[in-house]
Length: 401
Ligand code: SF4
Image (cartoon, rainbow, N blue to C red; front, side, top):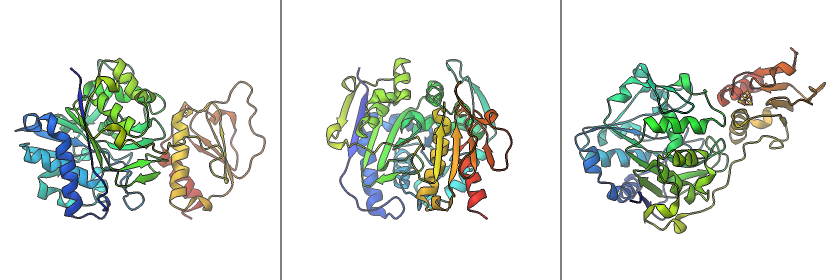
């Protein structure tokens, strides 16, 4: 039988994820309710403890209101599941390396009203991590999650519909990354991140995936980029691969372009061929638009940054580009002097630079040995380093003086 994927879509609502009233909250709830109709949520959640996993990566809604889950979508879905008979509805995420959910929650508009809707926050930091074997994992064999996460009966994945410079697009399978505790955040965070999330999917298969693009995100996502305002689209399904296939398609990305979709499909974890999916609701072609694609390379992106990507993989490329974009979108990049950045493995014919403009930044472990110690050499190690470390070092050296 074909897996059902439902697309619910509305026209303009005119409010934002930051400033919203009961008017758009009600409309988002209607949108969610419509998307859930084929999936008999009363049967799924009645009398059960439900965990909802949104995408609250580094929430900063004033900086960009479409990077993290739309607060209206979280309230709408949580209250619908509560109304459907769930005895407990908890919402939680690992919002980013070094950031607790308690701190992140302060930045989420309307989170102080969750209790009114029967939704409780789930604080990763309050639960000891537990290591779980992934016997079917091909690459990622043991994952660490907060122990209390295992107390839930039903897992509902609530990804954001957005572009992602590292993996193409961030949808349901990628959203599973936030189940991990910090300790494992940067392992396999290169091209292999797609395999890692599929290995997580084998163990933590969502009972339901509800991809939310009330305001979606295009361009230099997942941390920067431009909001796709009033996209007002919700895509729901039980098959997580089918939801990602439809989710990427509405952004103008073929399902086969995403490694996680391909890997999960070939592993038999779900369907990615649109013709083999029972598509319901709004016609895909009417909802679809071609999102601006992110650029992961930093070469030539900003005039004050002379970047050499040697044999760099996407881990270091995205860490540097995230950091530079974050400064650019925050209006601070112009304060950084002309510098030179090197990342990736030096090839056999590589001759280390004898001179360079400004400071020489070595990003990631690969280029470290090619250069000795020098007065104006800055090293940010890691494989890859987290983008936040690159950003922090840049700010410390040139901005936070
Ligand atoms: S240090 Fe090298 S291998 Fe590791 S992420 Fe960076 S470029 Fe890739």
